Image 1 (cartoon, rainbow, N blue to C red):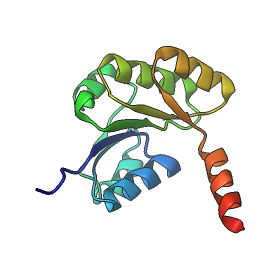
Image 2: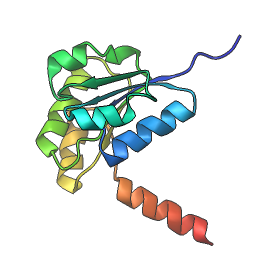
Image 3: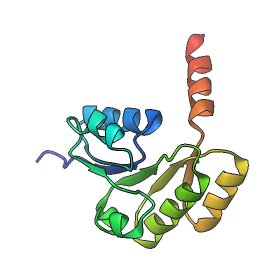
Length: 136
């Protein structure tokens, strides 16, 4: 029997979020993308299982996404630290099994980690390590 594909939720479809959502889809996973910007959603809606124009920091929106049954929830809300923190808090409260957040700075990461089991990713640092490690 074939393994069931994983289901991911990506909140924030800017450069990082949209690239992540597209790549997860390319690997055969079901991805739901959410962004408040209609243009951002339209840019990826053809390749995702679901793409919603909605506020990813709104508790009612997150309730509708069935977060407990997602393999992971990625939160990438750019430089909007407050919205990112709120979205993370609601995702945890609603039972998300794994929450990964694109960090803005050290203080943002510290606050996120105080909320509970949250993985913080600094995309630029991760990419710099990847490039440096693969140059030699």
